[in-house]
Image (tube, rainbow, N blue to C red; front, side):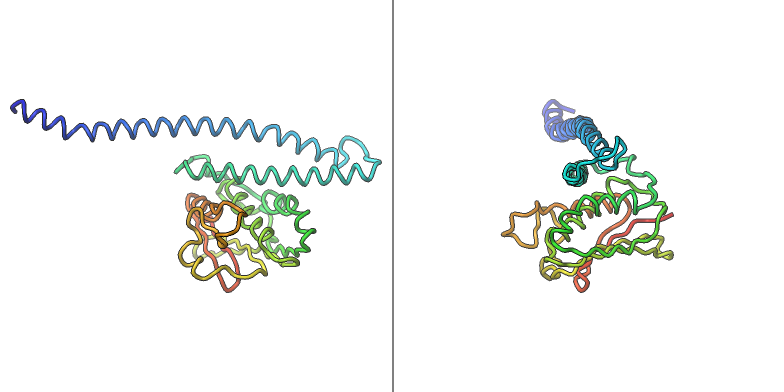
Length: 258
């Protein structure tokens, strides 16, 4: 091989070498961000969980009887506010994580008693808003101690986002229905969140519903338009998926069962 051909070969290989170096650098940055993100998440969760636990013990009179009714009422509201804050922070952190991480072995965890672990905390955290808007919640998810091989934070983020949307965008005195059933043939556990509000625009549902940064009302300043897209990413990562039934104004999602 003469010198000119050597030069030509090096020139052709240079972009490939640089591309590989760039990919390695990006992976290093992703790993560094992941470590940083996990540390920050832990630091954020710890004081909030401690405050929530302390106020909860006081509210439930584990530290002694509360004789002042006004103080008890304010502490109850503070506890509900902290519960809502915890759900919002965990949902936001989960959304950020899903934007950047494609796979995580820690996602495969077993959780039990969906009512106690997922549903009741969400209903409690939204209890003030539910009362304020006169919302009726029909919880048909009557089972308990069911086992799902999935991640608690991820499932809570999906449920929390869908329920929060119904509370936020549903009309005054609306009804929200939570339901679930098993399809044994498909080996799937289905969950649904629906409300008596108006169905979403047909064109929006068909073309943009689960896309990033999309809102049903583009003029609205409410929300970021990422929640439903992240929900789908989370569920697909967990082996499931989500759809929308416009006739019932119902979000229906599923997860695999063993």
